[in-house]
Image: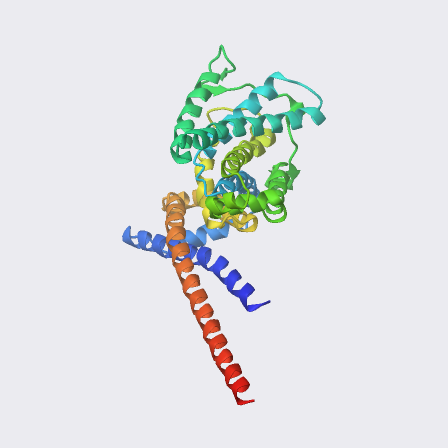
Length: 372
């Protein structure tokens, strides 16, 4: 591997490693301050990795985190901050659940229909923020935050019994979906089943890498994110790229809730997981917008979620996992900036050394020519 490639890999890995190390140290300090052991909670959570049922839960949870983080990462690559992934994925899941409960077609048609419903719903919801940004200059941060609140109200309306809601005790649901829309899982014996749509998360990760790194659209997207002015000078329409990025981000976000919807719950109810979109922001940051990095970050987040309940049985608060997640996000911001500055200084020193070497070589050549 070339020296430049080694440095690039080092810079890519240093940020997450430093962030995780700092987060673990700070979490240990919090435990010490509360009079608890700074090591036992982590040992207990690592111990959970050996149980097959916990492994299945981690993979299932990570699949949803991964899709949500990919949606966030697409916005990041365009220098956009799509905070609305949470509303987009919830609306996408609910609309898919409603369609799945009222339309019954063969599975070959039903499953693609539900996937398309979720994608179009998420894209429509994020597209509102995209249109506002390119036509009125409204910050996507403000727009998507407000759209999250509106999405919550829309969901509450759709849950009304005289709209699409079906009351099951005290729980609001959209009714059970037809079985033609269910996606069978991958049986793992007594450990349970891995969601079938885990494979969709893998395909989305591959597609994300291919589009960004092997297509003209991906190049234009990254170029516009780096500098809209420079991209416009090369013939790229920055407004079109902003709108495209928001639509694609929202479309992928709409799929984030489908692994559990089509693989387990088969209805959208009050028990449906929330907050996945916000967690996707931290996961995308930790994974540095790389599909492989995001996968590791999603598994880490899922492990913290699924292993932490064990702490309750040993006198520890399981919220230590939430503290760790927050500390990781804070550490990521600080460590990435430190690594970026370090890399910039190394690059400046290397360029300076090359220029100095070139100057010396030029002077030597001049002396040789003069001496002939």
